[in-house]
Amino acid sequence: MNAPSIFLGTLIAIACGLVFHLIRGGRISRLGLYVATAWVAFFVGHMVGVWLEWDFLRLGSLNLFPAMLATMLGLISASVLAGPERSPLGRRRRRKPPKK
Image 1 (cartoon, one colour):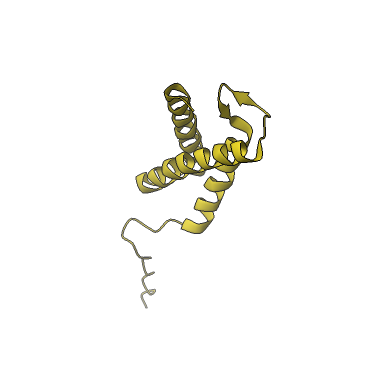
Image 2: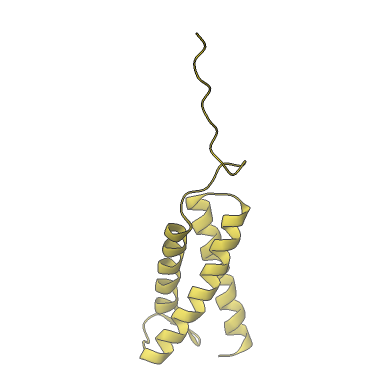
């Protein structure tokens, strides 16, 4: 794997993380989580594709199909494992009791 392939893979992974954040939403911390997860999952998926010798949807020396599959699975897993977003204060606001 050469430097242009690593650069292209990084750009594709970052774009996947950004699109997932655009669809899913959330604060800036979620954006960082999604981009980091996409980057790691993309290259792990690529390496698994090399290891299993999958040649479906290759772009140069990148195995796009297993890389994109791993990226989507990684992003969905990160979103589920991170749970729902907290309120900006970090806790739920209590409802005021009704006045009598």
